[in-house]
Figure (cartoon, rainbow, N blue to C red):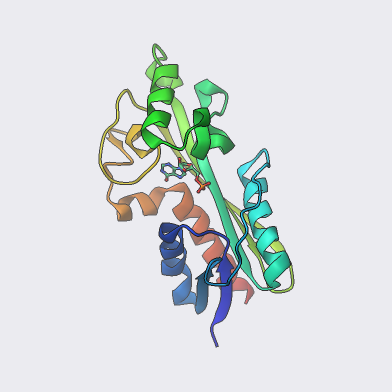
Length: 195
Ligand code: IMP
């Protein structure tokens, strides 16, 4: 029998990514919506890990079955780690273009060597019995000088890895090195070793 787990998210792209990695391991991943759970807990943690745990615990407390949640964002060193946990709502907006313009403007005059940044993804997994595990993936790069590329989403057009932005990578190329790809593969290894 397949092991059922709920993904504490309604984002269809995340659901697809988690299914691709976990279904071959005999897991059935269903969305929070498919599980009939209509909650949107306040993500008021100060780290990605805390926020993913807040989402996972909220769903586990209702469903009492295995739950996965993730939280992610961009840390820019020259901005003291901003946008960080505010990545999705940076500068009071949810508009990706406005986020990218804001980061580029704040980094005007900052030399290449100080434009280092990373994407971070935190995943919380709570098993049927309530045991909690955390997985973190990081993707190092630097902030460019203009938007480049049409793939991906969010901050991808300004996130440079060598000479290309992560919006110029194919989904497969990005998954192989990305924060979420790394955290997801850690989760997959944990599940295959612990069930
Ligand atoms: P959440 O994990 O759904 O809360 O999203 C966090 C935010 O971080 C997204 O809205 C994006 O702005 C940003 N982000 C997270 N991962 C990526 C990525 O792989 N590329 C570009 N932006 C990302």
